[in-house]
Image (spheres, rainbow, N blue to C red):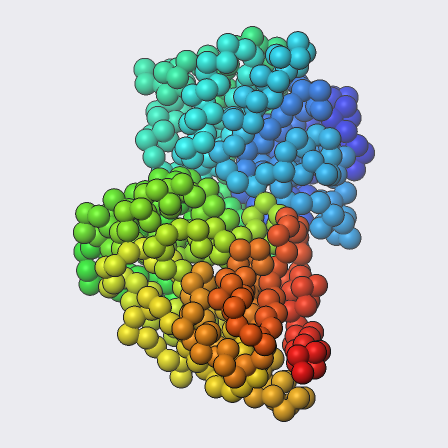
Length: 588
């Protein structure tokens, strides 16, 4: 076995050419076997195995700088830079991140998990090199739909004018997460079909030298192509045609499903954990497809992740022009739905919280400034969302709380989510966002629906002394705390479903302050600028009232267990009840 003896790229360069095919096979087995146990980005990483081997045989990192876009393409890179054991030994499968991480290796330049950044980063590296009078190559590897992101275009536009050596490798596997969207990909298809010779060429138009390589899984051909641009003194694009999922028939046949896989049987591809009968993706799709078919004005919009809304290829075909995937272009997505709403449509944008962050200006300047009735479904905004530091989604409440006129709702259950989304589609007073639950689907058939969710909370239990305001996914925790306060202390707490993540119900809170000594807020978002702090502001002038806010740290926590993170923040039934007991005693 070659891979277990590779401790650095020098060992890769020392291998004879005839050993490289076997090395590629070993890398693929490591990707498949480790991902089968812990999950991972399968298809995208399989597509760059040979390219990564060739890169490390031609260039010498860390002296030369290689920047992998999105990090969906770094597994082979990690194996060839001293971290192979994390893909070969099940005991060490979780030793490394699934994303580029400088704390792991000097061969990783940046922590990154969001798309379209590589060319801009490479521009900065190249300029810093030139200012220092140094000589080394800077290589950006961009693929997996990243070219549709606005930052990628900005980087390419600037790179073409650097008047210095910069190598941009386009890993063209013909896919984003779902099928590629956008005119630039039509040009890539033309370039592939013509062997890179067609008259229309977006990269030449921008000012790049351009090279094309059809055989993106031929290591010898890749090495030759990369050597031809090594040490180049001007910006060049090397366009390489690869296959997403290459070498694993299941992934190659279904690139969308195998972009990222949960643990699976490596032989059959069957998931190891049964799928939930219903989750918020299917709940969303069920509601929206009915609305789409009943009303031509309803449009579902997504930015390259249609599965979060439950829109399978079949449902997308069924929706036709009323489902729009804009590709990896969150900024455009927000402004696009602003235009849809102004034009009389009823747009619903589904987007991960971690990616919505990239559209901050568009949310503020386009959506909210124009006060249009678009709906945004914010997925993954929870401690139960994606746990990698690169993809954290629980910074959403402070961000969206800074948007004037935006109503941000946090449903607690399936029934409330459906009712809120239905209301949001019909209202016309301004933008509405929903913090889609992430924990298990909870049913509350007796929840109290509202005629309007523009303001107001739901009083679930009315008591005294202690008020529990449990937001969204934290509502079941609030219920359990209320039960234990009664059981252990004889305190009948008031339990509130706040409904609004960013706008406390000031009237209700002020009323409760008359017969409640302690207010407890529960949220699985960051404390700083979060829901609890907003409630504390309302109570700041109330006499003889204490406030205890529970939430998450303002930190890039990485690969955590949700229950452990919540416990570290005191967010357990035992911890909260103990705190309440102490605070009540202190308030006498």
